[in-house]
Length: 129
Image (cartoon, rainbow, N blue to C red):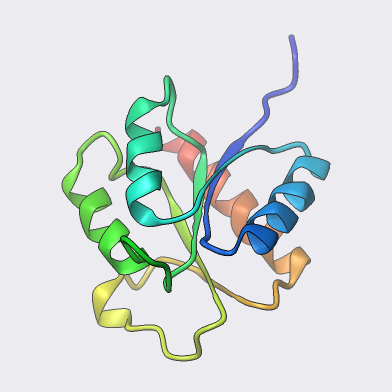
């Protein structure tokens, strides 16, 4: 039996940050897909054969920002169960617009913290698919 590889969707408008995160995650054994904004991510998610184990979400993006993505994700039963972590450089996250349980990983990224958050999200996802 092959080892299970968790998959992560990175929603980040800065291609350098998205690529750097993807490289870090792939080095750790994750499979990764990326999207440049919330609208692109929703289209991608709805076309995947299986949902990702977790989503890393930037808040400030063009077209559809992270807050808008979260609103649409919550309303789509096929996407609502995918765990999300916010990855942001913003110091003022509007907590009233996101679930209190959503973890926040500040930029610049603390890689050990990122893996701690992802490991917890993926474990939770396995226990409650």
